[in-house]
Length: 264
Length: 171
Image 1 (tube, rainbow over the protein chains, first blue to last red):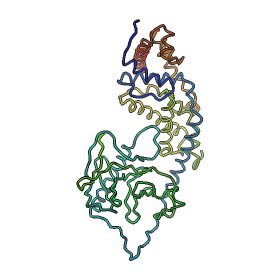
Image 2: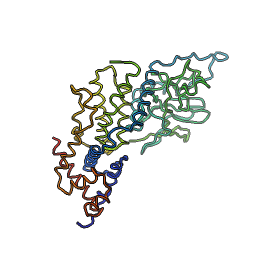
Image 3: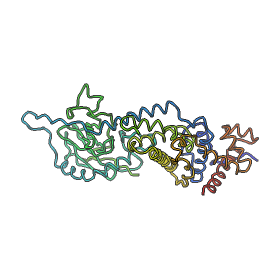
Image 4: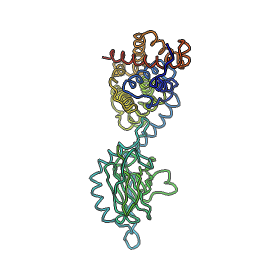
């Protein structure tokens, strides 16, 4: 038989080479449904005769055990939300915080979209078999094509204001902190409940288990910071650490606040 | 059956090896097997009611594992893959209890042996050298007296043929 060169066979060899070396094969080396069936058969053959890896690595088993123990304890721990402190009255009995009309308006819309937001948040979170039980944590949420969508006028979100917004792909808050405008997901990174803005604490509060996020999207009542800086809004710490809220890209243009809306 | 704190860890300890073996036999590589195994228990810690009967717990875990593997082939290759069920028999809880599942997965191996037996000689030879003896393409080519290019084409055709035979014997 003369020497042959078949691009498909060459590429598929890359799949086999990784598989048989015990590494993670790349889906890019599989290019048709037929080849997917071949890959599946090859994986089954490698799994059937590769007895060296048929049993899990001890270190993996122990590491996962620790992870499960923490998750189990964490889930049990957050069944009861931390008790809420009453906001301290300020001199004159009046809070400096004030709501914009826009925020009041958007608040109603946001509440209606709450359930959808949870679902959308889950579907947008990166998926892989090793996902932790929590969601989000990415700085940017940009996947493939998309467009900038106006979610508010800058005039309606002056410095110090927080306003709800809702796009096709996303439910969240725009925050203007001293002229720095940012957007935050309203999906809690614990179990996906919809966060509520609490003006008196300047935080985003989860109604399910009582996680509070600051206006930068970080967990505000976590244990890690509690000792040095107990959170004013709670009598005790939220028992587990959570990833930051997802922050979609945002820009201000011609007096409009625009949020990047990804299209699948 | 004990409940409460530590109960989940008990479930984990009883099933982690079995689930890993089940997954490994179907994806054939350690990194993906570890990811999928972790995924099964992450879902379990959130959703599995550990107060259920041991048989129900095992059935739940293996069903999630099986679905995860189906998703893996669907999503990982972005292709519609049918016939995932053919690798599945043997995991359902039986009267023998969970011991049966903890045993190494022999059925996949039996199926592979049968597939190899049904291939033309040269196809079987190239797959045996690569998969059983774990030879590289270059070593396989030398052992068969052919070029590396030929060995790659030969193993490609052998796997394609075996996939067709596998499909025919599934029903």
